[in-house]
Amino acid sequence: MAAAAHLFHHLGVFAGDFAASERFYTAALATLGVEPGYRTDVTAEYWVPGRDTPSLSLETAPRPTDVTRGLHLAFEAADRAAVDAFHRAAVAAGGTSRHAPRFWPEYRAYTAFVSDPDGNNVEALVKEVR
Image 1: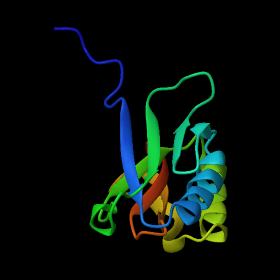
Image 2: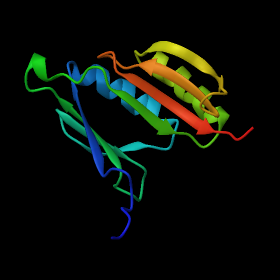
Image 3: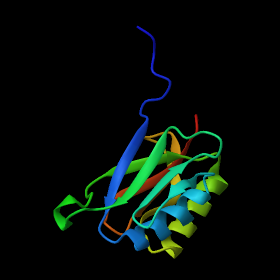
Image 4: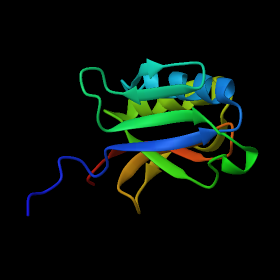
């Protein structure tokens, strides 16, 4: 059996306030080199330019009960500076800091955690072997 090219192809997040979530994800992910590759009034699909997978699909929740909540979503960063920039941009774009950037020895990673407008835990990290 051949190994998968990626762990996942895409992930969907349903937003309670699409405009607020789009501002948050667009600003935060730009610091990691991830951009909206496709956009409508109710959907934004984020990926690394030149590669449309894996991707994050942000959509307006069809009903209030469909809003994505309780998700922990982690994005790989190139370096500590990108993690720091992610945290600053995410908070400036309406996110709430959960943990400022720091090294977590138990994860062997430099990470920052921010809640998106719906309370999901969004993380940027760079693994470091010490």
